[in-house]
Image (cartoon, rainbow, N blue to C red; front, side, top):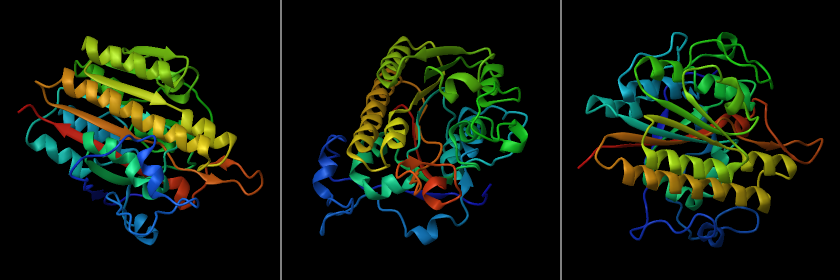
Length: 315
């Protein structure tokens, strides 16, 4: 586990705003994935040699959300919050939050396809760099993300999906009187490891159904915290490579869907204080033995993720 101080990067936009995530950024890229000469990158990150210095890990999501709501953290939460996000609570705590978890979107994708993430940054302009926990696989990372605890504490140390028995973010929210909904693809880690709690579960066939359910929940306004999980990019990456056309289309779909639910939250929660976040559990690399996408190592492309946060107050 890597601990220290998180880093914040505030994106700059074109005056006219970002174009559609699924197509506009392609024109700025060369066939090798690098930007064309003269194409300005509004979300440019520092050189990779600087990336791993002093980062918090993904477990800091739990304490950050608790601080934004102004509630006690789970019993096993030891990860400090992302201070640049939690600082918004000094002005006013939030009453609603929507966290959109897209599987396997590593920081290396944000660096290479910055324009694709401009719709995310419009809703969530405060971004922090964080590290996955080890091993950098989905159930281990999401267990830490939503307990605030390291793997040795929460108990998931490999690619397995038992129901967690330790205290979680969702338990903390429920104890504080907040109503929680988890919307996830059937049999995914998010769908399984947080069961048996006093929260509402919505198990969906795939990503399209997840976003539709999330839109309905936001419109109904019966929940204070909604976690929505999608997995298409991870699926396509494993079947091909992290930057295949199929994987990049899936990445763009996640951005599009986050934009949809964040717009819905903005309209429905316009009169209250609320937060939205776009998070991911780990990155990816190409397995030299199979030639396909994978993750789980301690290499930078697997560990580095970028988490986007937006904290909004009524005018």
